[in-house]
Image (cartoon, rainbow, N blue to C red; front, side, top):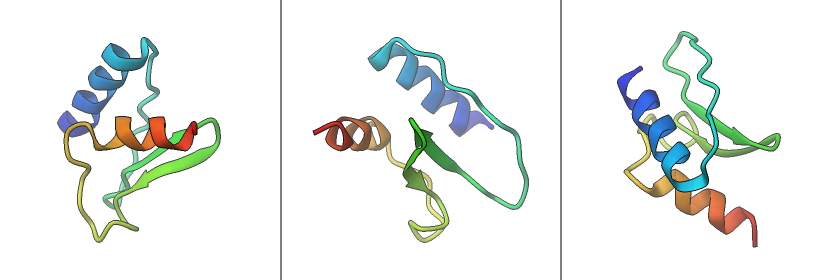
Length: 63
């Protein structure tokens, strides 16, 4: 949960919005924005996003 909390704080700072953290199991870590998946730990080979990576993906999906 510390990584998810850190990402939530980053999203709040950059986009001035609250992230909803949903506890789960099995190592799932997905980030959805407006119903679109912007990051999936499973799809990325079981790695967490680097700092700023999710923000960049959200910005690039808006183009």
